[in-house]
Image (cartoon, rainbow, N blue to C red; front, side):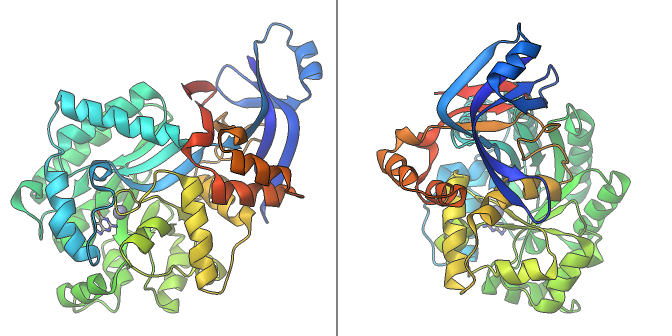
Length: 426
Ligand code: GUN
Ligand code: ZN
């Protein structure tokens, strides 16, 4: 048992989602890392006189972020400038990913640095694409297990349209997926495997079919891929799959859609496809810093939402330019504003926390209510004097949150807890 005190800022787990700003509140965290009770320090201390107290005075406690789309190898190529997605993949991405193979000190160091960076930014769960190499993916799982953060991790499947060292033949890929599944899927409550066809152009139909079958055999695995990010990509899909009525039908036809599937981007999407996304409760991971960096387009958040598609947020490093979900919310706001449909601060926080957890089927993650996992970041607004000044002039909880969305970053993340354990302190 432990008692942690601070000012809570989080989404109450109800629909419509509601923001709670609760000054000087104490969480009682049980030995399983769950929030058992909430209240005043004096009352909780009376009931649990032996529990140690951690007092985050003048700090905000915000749920840990869920980054629902990020590429491990691509942290080495953030800011690699190219005219658009396909030349960016050819010129920078594939050569970088070729270097992410095998078990070595270099790869171990990279995996630890990746985790350091996630934690430094307040991320407590990440949906990660590793490279197409089995051994480095295995090592990444190992580092996540050791460091204690939550990971939905996949070895990127690709067997065509990339340099030979990245391609893994179908039979090898499936047996490597099965090895990762046996070793890591549900290894502890924090880790899961995501089957990860890179995107339809990188996988032959029989590979996508085999991944769809593997998912049907193990329905609690996740699926993650890219979808409708770029107009050049859409034209290529038409060439490669002339029989499909649209891009979504390609994934549909291999049984790759459903509530455990996370499709990154979903920018160039007709209303009919939005309806099918909603019907299957397929999740869209919106990655605004990436979409702006590659000039991919402006995501139609409100329209997707009206259709009932679950929307979550991703950094998409390295097309994305920041590990910070604060920065990602900031850019998501501007993308929506450019479309003439601005968002509320609570919409953004929910997509980075509670709604993301809900979408992923994690019913006890993403909020600081009783019964939820003690996964949170400790925010010190004084780390940025401008932020402190702006928060002081805010007149509502929503305004405080808006100030954080537009001004907070890793400088403000003082400490991070997952499952009742402090994983990072600055
Ligand atoms: N489409 C296929 N692969 C990728 C990738 O690595 N990044 C992005 N942004 N889009 C992709
Ligand atoms: Zn991506």
